[in-house]
Amino acid sequence: MNSEPFHLPKPWVIAHRGDSGEYPENTMASFRNALEIGADWIELDIIHSSDSKIVVIHDDTLDRTTDKKGEVKLLPYGSIAQADAGSWKDPKFKGEKIPTLWEVWDLVKSKNIGLNVEIKSGAYEEIPIETPIEQELIDYTKKNSLFHKTLFSSFCWDSLVRLRELSIEARLGILIGDETSSWMDALELGFRLNAFSLNLSAKGLDKETVSKIQNEGFKVLVYTLNSEEELKFGIDLGVDGIFTNYPSRMRSLLT
Ligand code: G3P
Ligand code: MG
Image (cartoon, rainbow, N blue to C red; front, side, top):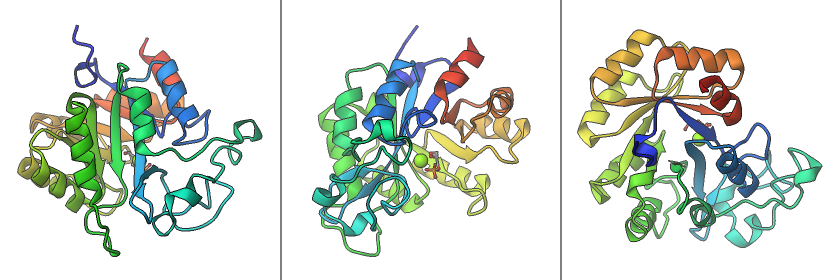
């Protein structure tokens, strides 16, 4: 069996923000544990700091997941790196930092796990960014020969267009919000960009829609299913992968 991430048996167990049910989301502790428990993929979110470092955090601000406040894109990496990103989850995680994307890559690139990099800030930000994030991502992936284990995704479709302009090799997942856009629009973009997957909310999704998308040649990845009941629902839909904060729970349902 080919054990490269894109060839793993479906549905993939995708550790959403790492093993984020048990560990502080988007931290090295969370990613290390996702590796430990045998997730197929890790998903993380990235944003540019004010000095163009790619940091791993979900929200626009530090407020919810650290002991500091402020908008990430307006702060230099030096201040972001001082934030405690662990204590909000549990005091035992005090001292966990907001990692850079490169630190996470260093942890996972030699391991048998895929990385889904979700871009939260794109090429067409309101404030000009000297180095567009997409160019950096493609340069790094190419230099380190990591296309075979990387899926880029974004709700910002302009960002996906830019990635495709920069690389024909990059695998792209088109993220679709609950209400913002329909899977049919995404399908159209999927053909145009030769995308790998449509990444949808599981809310309101049915087997018929999943099959339709798959029959058009795209994988279907769904977010974010956590309880045993939700995970069973997702598995039963016949999707190709499930984003979950409880990857070990999903793994035990599959074995
Ligand atoms: O990529 C799947 C999921 O992470 C998208 O939503 O808000 O959790 O980044 P969000
Ligand atoms: Mg995400």
